[in-house]
Amino acid sequence: MAAAQTGKRYVVPGGVAEFIVTKGGNGELRCGDVPMQIRGQEDPNVTVDTTGMEVVQLGKRYRDEQTGIEVLVVKPGPCALNVDGRPMELLQPKVLPSAD
Image (cartoon, rainbow, N blue to C red; front, side, top):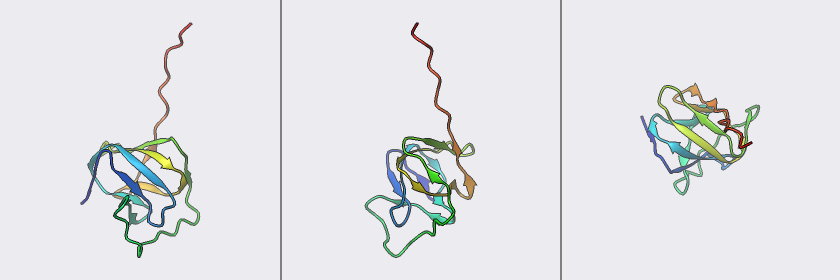
């Protein structure tokens, strides 16, 4: 099992979406059934069919509850984002107190 490394950029094979790991952990980031690749170490022979996948939005954060892995979307695109087959959940923005 691969570990998601904090601070590393991971790309969906084919470059359709990109993420930065903000909290690492033991688990493999995937788009559908295909493992994501560290940016700069992509294998051009690996591709993902993203047909019908939901688009991850720029600036959104996702988390895997079991491993604690968190990612930030830096390039939006279609991706069934998961860790070891478990879908990652979209984190809601934190509400800050008003400064009346």
